[in-house]
Image (cartoon, rainbow, N blue to C red; front, side, top):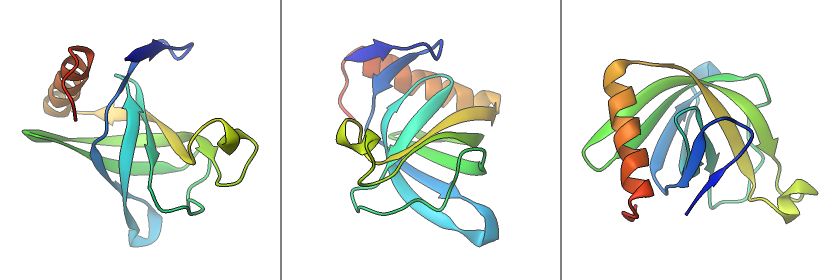
Length: 121
């Protein structure tokens, strides 16, 4: 259930809860569509325009069953609702991990390993 892309890291399908902290005290809740050691794709089931643009830096909290990942990310792709790209891909945005401490990296690696093994999230 994973796919390899030119991004350099294997992506796995994971549906997990994510909080994103943006500028001006914004805190928004999303779900993950997939993740890799280098990044995540986030979306919400409510159709909306996202208040982020490519290049926005965000603080992210990704929650797992037994822990959470805290990291700094940058938005690298936005799929707007109703866009041409949205006909093929879900609306949402992709982020690349910029900073992640060792404890968070271990939790992230564990999530990826469990997803590869077929555990359901």
